[in-house]
Image (cartoon, rainbow, N blue to C red; front, side):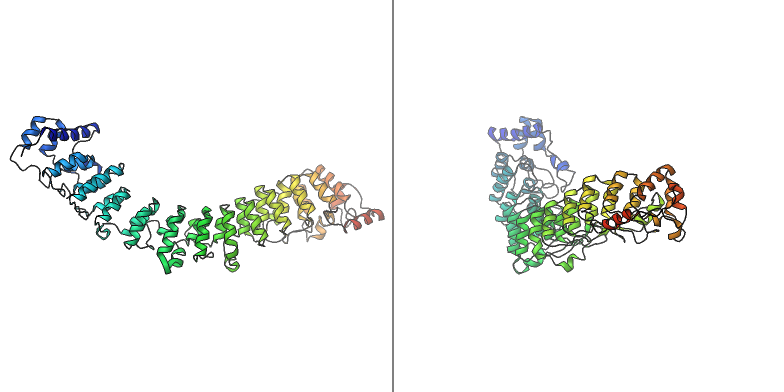
Length: 546
């Protein structure tokens, strides 16, 4: 069999392409993992690399059958890998190679074309030629790979579509068709999604992450894909939407968290359950988190607006996180406005905060027995004074005496004067006392003692704070003396000045014992009628009025 000069030039063109890419003829051994690594280079392939024209002529004119050894890597496979259509045509149309000739691993040229991932259009053109020449679209390699397998792995969906049109049957594929559907959804390839679905891909099949195709489409904000799957599911549409992962997450959670309001609206209209709870932070323990809390935590006010009419309050009560608290944590002012307008409670607590070391010791009853905190406390801690003011106007409790941390006391300790003034103007109970107290002295006064912010203490006294110095000594507290605790941590001269100021807002120095009098260095006296009247009148005014 003789080969013309033009045909030899085509062979040399392929050899030059291989050399330019720095690839030997044995490219298949190192680049395509599904195929065997060991192979034998044919005489013809060697002559192509060496550009030995005389050797090509001698080999091509020899009587040895060197072109059809199935165990060898043939030049046709090399040409297919380089997507050199002219070489492929020459080798096939000259009857040198069969279109389905096999190389190591029983790999056909069509399979080789399907492995090329970076030149999709060229690969499709070469594959179409092979198929027109009768290549088997369902051929199997030794490791049970089909051309369709390889095209999908290369993400060449136009080639995969071509194979399906030419008779490729996905059921022969080594990987489940449904898994290819997940891959097509991630690439948003509408035609491939349609074909795989029509071929019977399971819409409820999970990928390695546990996601269904619909979940992948929702997470990718692939609206047309979501619509297609809902239509394809037909009477199973509701079940598909409400399909839950191991942590309880559904498509509603994904859409709400990501802010995909159009998809969320579609899911709700097609039967999505807005009250299925999921785990918080995908922990192994499954605390319940409502979808509206997911939306609020990610500041998705557009999705919160859609979910509000569908929230079941009884399910929401079981959620580990309240939506108002979630809005404060996320710093979402718009979501907070929506929730407050809808009438959501503002005092649902979250916990817990534990103080392991409290100093001075007289602060222990104020902080040691309290664990839970409310949205207002969280807003004050974050410095989100706009949200704090909204919560106060909505009726949030400003101070607590039981197991809740008091927002007012935190503001008194740590915040600027403006937010403290907001509390006073909203008639905070400045004389509140913790249930676990050791003496009947307001918490606000004890907090002020620890910080020595006397300018604030003066404001509190003017606003109606009762110093209650009659309860500082041992006589009234079963042997406990607040004065002793204060003297143990502060300078006596400072305490003396403090008590002299507090006496001005008290009926007088206690005469039950000499404990307070000795520090003030003054004898107990009968207060004047004017002073007592002034104190009595002040009790009839609110904090904001004073």
